[in-house]
Image (cartoon, rainbow, N blue to C red; front, side, top):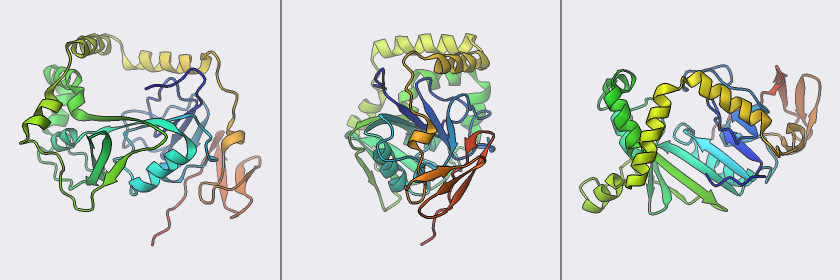
Length: 278
């Protein structure tokens, strides 16, 4: 990620393992850990909100991180538009189609590919061809875990954008990934030797350092980062529905325009909205 030293950074779907450079965290589920790998982390300014209805003013951030969220949403058009509304640059990461075919997460709504420099999405058929086989191997088999880390390019879509997110949503739920094409196979399987070396080092690091220690170190770094931006939530929050000005009260936030109210629980604004059904 090409995050600059003074960038003000939002992370959507920050979950249990937020990035150290994220200044504001946003997650749709504060109390529900079902779709993440651990308990929610709230070690910096945090808002409970749906990425499809971000409660921030236009251009509030310099950079937005969105890891493993796009494949979950009901309306990817809306999420991507909201990201471009609140920031001019950012990074998106999702499972690749290879990952979806192998693991088959039942709660993923979309399959994502990166083709010719843009994101290509289609509705997830949710076939779960291998059931829980590879989930079990990932949990129990160190050789499969090593393969997964060494070849993570096969399992991930990584996309950094500047000014605009280039994407297409296919209306027919049919895969655009041609695994019979030699060029496609070459692109998916080609990994530079230097990348292999870096992955070996990362594998060793992950093997020897407990996750709890890594999470604590990341949290400590995030709180003590030099040159931390001075914006607060009161400077950047807006109504998630109408994007208008809000008024802060002791235990709630009130929209001046549409008169919706949002509670503040344990210091965290709870600003989820119910999407309108057309």
